Length: 418
Image (tube, rainbow, N blue to C red; front, top):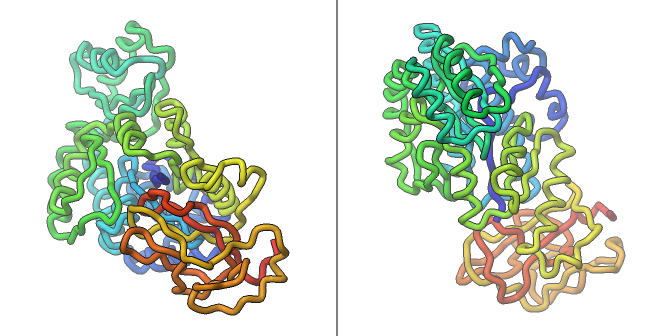
């Protein structure tokens, strides 16, 4: 199963949008700018880090950048079997899953950033990462500090982030060193996010959350607050409200995704912090960061090389799926049955494939598919191609049980000879 994860505040980088300006997915910026009532182009291309570090700017810029990458990934035909996002990234995950519209998601992110900045101005705080310490010892360090300091993120085994007042952090980090923390890394923020110091932001944000329409997610979304999947749309306003004052249980969340069968976790957006946490937390799951257009090929390679998504792993060694190629994915869970007579192009030259577009039944080897042609079924559901192209290879075999969003076939643009 392919799952999408989305980064939070702190992943933003100055000039992070430049690699995407010529990509079709850059059009997301114009749409988000219209919703936000401000031109976001300069924020993604020219803003210095001093400007991007401001909470309101950091959250909006990271959110939009992740949506650009999401759009690009969807354009090559990849869709998730599950989604999750770290802190702010949870809003991106809800947009990706269909639980929030782009317009509502953008407005919520703007309000969230403004509310958190106001709360930080009212009660200044900071955060620090503790490396080489257990969850229990990190909690004990905060308790022994006898100050306003709490665990804010359970990121990975041996990596915990704490947040609180400047005084509280100073004492808690000393206690953490006494309890065995190998390293303490200050995080340059002005607020104690995911702690009780964010209560004013929670109260303010809840009013906006209650005015927004949530939908049942089309794919499972794992929540930060409890690392559980919530399919009921009515639960998400409360979860997002609670998230502001509750620790992000990212380690537990990754374990939930792994336990549900995730084999590839794609981090969509700036940076690659979440991908590093995958390696530390669920080493059997492969992580890949998609931050620039060139990373799309890397993601496609990883998906195509996953044993569960290929007829045999050996058959695909050394092959590369470029962005001129597309993947047809299963629209539902169930048993896959390819259409009789629809054949894939294996070793013959693409230029020799001359079958006419049509029904997808009884086609010649290297069948050319038109948009909407059926390639098979999953249970009672038709699997149809959203792209025009030549069928290159099957990624699922007859009778294989597949999950929603799992690739079942490769196709390539007829004009691309590979």
